[in-house]
Length: 90
Image (cartoon, rainbow, N blue to C red; front, side, top):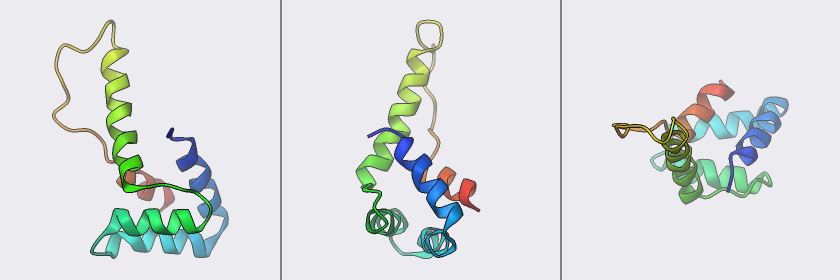
């Protein structure tokens, strides 16, 4: 799965206040990523927690491979696609 689906979901949520509210409310849940994915899927954007995790690790993996033959050191952590999405939506 590529990140285009998150771009489409972000656009949709910015145009639909109820969708935006529901996605943002996931951060207060005991299982935020699961609730986010459930809400997104119910809105027609099929996303799983595994998809979110894969998007983050794939993005960093591609960065490492694209830096003049690869970075000489691994990242200590990668960005959280879920958290970045919510920050963009807020």
